[in-house]
Each structure stands twice: as C-alpha cells, then as structure tokens.
Image (tube, rainbow, N blue to C red):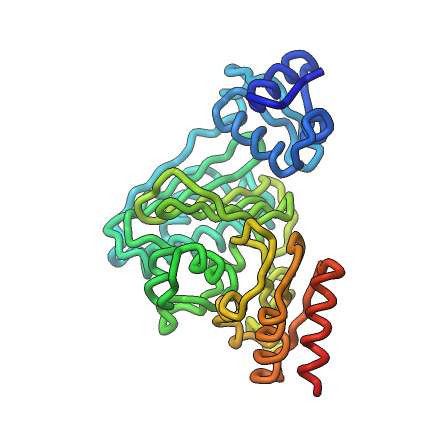
Length: 348
C-alpha cells in the first residue's frame, strides 16, 4: 500500500522506484486525488529532474530520472536577449529557428504553429509590455518543443486591469481569454493569446503573483498562485511531431468572411466555491462579449447559479444583443433549471 496522506511527491517517487514506472492513472487509483492533481505532481517531479517522462499522450509513463539518458535527449536551449524598440518578431523567430534547426526537427504542422505562436507572443511584448528588452528561449527536449518569452514590463494582467478599470487581476485574466480584448485596439485585434492558448499542448502565462495555466491535453484551465514575476512570462509547449491544424482552429472561431466572431468562456475559472449568484458577477462575465456573434458558456464544475446571474446573462444581455447566439454547455440539472427559466422569460 502507498498511503498518500502526506508527502504526495515522496510517495510517487517511492512508487516509481518499486514499480519501475507509473502512469498518471496509477497515482489516481492509489491516492484518490484527481487526474489533474496527479499530473501536476508528476510534471513537477519531471521539471525538478526527479523523474523522466516517456511519451506525450494521456498514457505517458514516468520512470526514474537517468542523467546520462536525459543529457542524450536534450537539445541545448537557444537564448536571445533583444531590445524591444524597433524589434521585428519574425526576424527573431528566423534566427532562433535557424540556430535550432526547427524546420528539420519539427513536423510541418508543428513548425507553422510555433512560428505563429512565437511571433504573436513576442509582438505582444513589443507593443504592450512597456519593457526595454525581452528574453526569448527555445528548447527541444524529449519530443517537446517549448519556448519562453520574458519581459520586465507592466505585466499582462495589470495592463488589462488598468485599461478596462477592473477590480482585480483575476477578472483581468478571465477577460484576457475571451479574445478581442486588447489594450491597443488601433494595432491589435486581441486574437493572439486567444488562439495561441488554444493551439498549444500546454500554455502558461505568469505575471505578478498569478499564473494562468491552460492544459489542452487535460482540457483544463486554471488560475493559480505563482512565484512573483516582474513583467510577463509566457511559456508554450507543443509536441515535436504535432499534427494539429492551425487553419482548423481559426475556422472554428471565424465566419465565412474570416471574421473572428466566436468565443468560449469557462464559467468556473476563478471561482473556487463553484457557485455564481449575483448580477455583478454576470456583468463581469459578459463584459466585452458583445463583440462576438457566437458565445459558448461552459458551466462544467459549476454547482449552482443565482436567478440574478442567469437573468442578467440570458435575458438582459440576450435582449440587448439579439443577434448574438449564446450556447450554454455542461450544465448541472440545477443550473439548467435556472438558465432555462431565464431564457423563457427573455422570449416573453
């Protein structure tokens, strides 16, 4: 038996030593913790060179860390530090791609995605960060391509909070994921983070004391406390041989005229209690969504909503913008009852 009451990571290491290897499902079965929690523990042990990961799907196995084997699989990271004034993001990517041989080492689909994501994120730093320089790093290790872009500017969450006069950075982080939410509309459409966070296998944005973690392999989005970061740090991960189709992603959120007209919002992102009750919460949720024609609201994990919340979204907002189609998903029976009643009242 492997009691996981204390020292979860230590127990995982003991289990790996005894069995030779484990998958995340083994940890879930023996400990009772969620798959997301098990994966985060395993990811932390890999990052600290205590375990190694073999494979990159949900069936990936974790084995004891072997320094010699790990060294043979690593491609040295390439770091560039550049002044942001007058910087051209595509030229920086070309330099990094040439020095790391990305055209040879990545699938054609992966290369197209990484080029798009890297240039979008570096352009954000150039236009929004108010920093003097940015540090970029590209690494290929264990079949995973990753890049990091770090600036020491105002910080993404704080920039959004100030621009839209929000009360805290948690609301700003939620707002950032809606798409079309930019602090410089004359230069940006607000699509970069929206699409980059969705095409990545794993996307992390850290700023201040907050970490936005989008894990598309686990279909999980979380806001977490983080070690303080001055400015903004973006980290992007993608499998070296990924077959994801960037065009299909764009097509899913654009109309026939290639206009970005659809978004999706995870309702539970910053609420630990799992309940939304007030009109003010609803107004924060729908702020900025009038720019879209199609809105998907994902209620997965939400235990309940109040009548005021549902009325503000599904009657008041729906009547004000009748051209917008709102599609709620993954509603519990109690949430569905309140939402359906509000939608019926909007038709009267």
